[in-house]
Length: 460
Image (cartoon, rainbow, N blue to C red):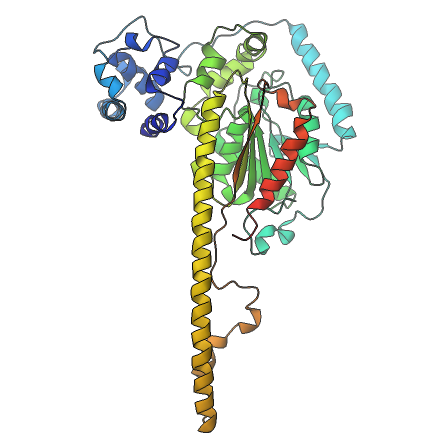
């Protein structure tokens, strides 16, 4: 939680009043008491009601509270006690709300997906496969993806731009709405579409896989097809599951694309409040409320499997050699696009600075090596002349520095770690999920991803 407190301070577009008011379901900051804040921290840190936490847990809550007061002085004037009129987000403890739907709705959705799976998916070249109970769709387009042909065999650890693409969907009825974008982004390479039934509207599947289980299932899929690394794409909720795999198996990811990323700033109130608590006003908000947030499968998944500390994706923790592209809609109804854009921009600048530092260091090392080599060559020539004049044979130790010289072109004198770039695309006047529809923005997204994939492999 202290990390979240720090992040609020780092963002110029945000305040701690807004942060706490958001988690307290829009309550005025002046109405929030310290007891309400402690209650929120008890849930956020331990998934418990305040009276149920242990003494040690209470000490941890008080420690975070004191830290927050130091970093945000406005909390020092917060009154003691508990205001019973103020409620806060605690979806994992609250009852599960739902709106009953007629059986016909599920029948029609199943029929739609059956038609998609029977006719459209094969027409696009996809096969429906299964490994260890995990279903997925696979489209074979490239034969240069095996471990034997892995980019890791080369001097680069970044992406080559030809690795298979693995997609993770958001809350939806299935893959029908993703086909155009997936095929556009995955043109010329193998494509894997992984099913997560617990976030499908038609599944009535209430068992959400753990991050470890889903990551291992994806790992088994890659092993089955002899794929070493993938370019990972996550949309909406899929940005969370993409983060799961990235954390568990970073060595199998060469690039990440996050579209409508609800996984970013998940420790901020917007995603939880907007999706689970907000009273809808606009048409899109009503669609989200009726067809997603209050659907029994989705409501159960989010309110009983939504641990923000498991789902939050911190860009700072993405390995430097993995490039990242983030796509944000300016009218996103779920995330805070302004705050996410600022956060991504901060992380991008950090990557640029690190890239420049490493570039400067590489140039300095090269200059130092060149100077040393020149001095060594002069010294070696002098010694050689002296040795020849004295008819002295070189000993075995004299040649030890020449071992492996025949491979010097393939082994750099100093290994330079790659620093790939972070890019952010902003789609003006787009709503959450609108980028999935056929759009001119698809070409810009594909071009940006392809360029970013290869950028990290260039010499610094």
